[in-house]
Amino acid sequence: EAGVAQSPRYKIIEKRQSVAFWCNPISGHATLYWYQQILGQGPKLLIQFQNNGVVDDSQLPKDRFSAERLKGVDSTLKIQPAKLEDSAVYLCASSPGTGNEQYFGPGTRLTVT
Amino acid sequence: AQSVSQHNHHVILSEAASLELGCNYSYGGTVNLFWYVQYPGQHLQLLLKYFSGDPLVKGIKGFEAEFIKSKFSFNLRKPSVQWSDTAEYFCAVTLTTGRRALTFGSGTRLQVQP
Image (tube, rainbow over all chains, first blue to last red; front, side, top):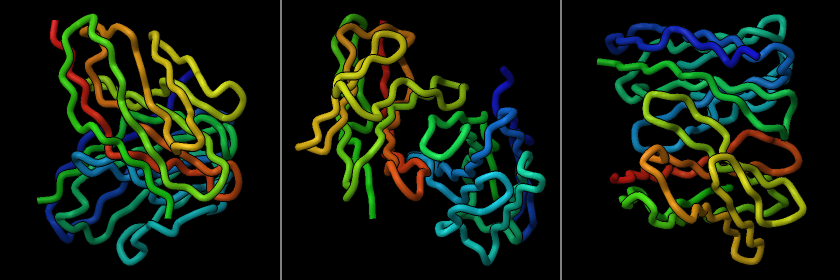
């Protein structure tokens, strides 16, 4: 079974630029999560999708972050404009439904200079 | 708001030593509990989980954890660590109803010396 795929693996941008990350969950997984992991901290939820609907985006900085999950499969997370404090690893995870074990992708390491 | 505390940020052990990593959570309702591991250069993987039933759960690679509801704790243990256990370990919690996203602790970096 293929795992959660993410791209790119690494990205370096200057502040005020925009960036987008892509996630392809495990086939058939209805629930998709985006987490932000700042160095030295545990992952923190940004947004949770159930199929193509948003379940929880209470911790997403909506003035600069946006995410979508068209057709209930792939998802993209965008930051515009980026700030220095957005430097982190962005993790995508999926699960068959809410309350199940989550499977994580390798993450995208973002450096904002 | 819910929170998860991991008391040990960095642990150094010699091979064959016993391991116990602490995890306490602050939650108002019934919870599901997880330990995830991240080996160097790899992505987060599930080590073990507790949903209900026997509070002593066994996971992969000889790890186990005990859920003590009265102490809001879910400590991870292994009787004899190996060099290959060098990794970062994260405790995580979800509620059993409503929002199901994981709330993670800050992680414990385990270094096992040969």
